[in-house]
Length: 157
Image 1 (cartoon, helix red, strand yellow):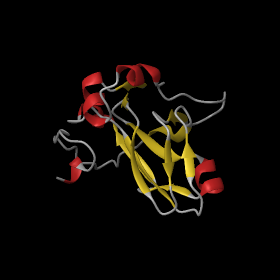
Image 2 (cartoon, helix red, strand yellow):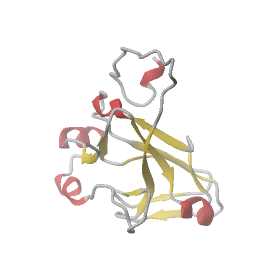
Image 3 (cartoon, rainbow, N blue to C red):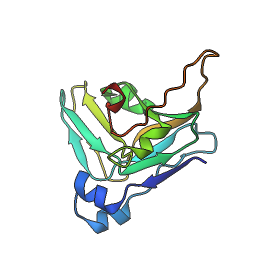
Image 4 (cartoon, helix red, strand yellow):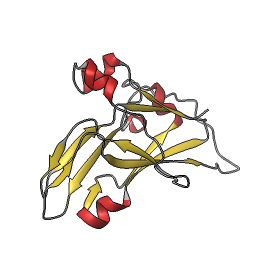
């Protein structure tokens, strides 16, 4: 099974804001066209990213997927091509067990404006895209029995 879910309202309050109207108003990622590979994530609120500025942005979304799936979070082509906006980590790699992390699997993005103009995003604008991919293991892979118990960067602890 593969599906997007909203984080709980409790997590939303902790990470974003105690605002039930805002929580109820945002949409889960969806494909924009029949043949889109990526699921567009929409901005939860308006923001402006000034030239040179870096911003950490919540999505309000978590994802359930098969154990051999990975979700890549990638810039939308227009962000870099038209506006020179980049994700700070270039590609976000969301593992299947991130769903069970201590932040409920809440996905965040961090973007930087490398252009010379303000980058203005309105609530509901598509800001990044997520693409599901099956991955393979080597024939001599040694399976880890370590379970994730943290959020971003937790597999390095």
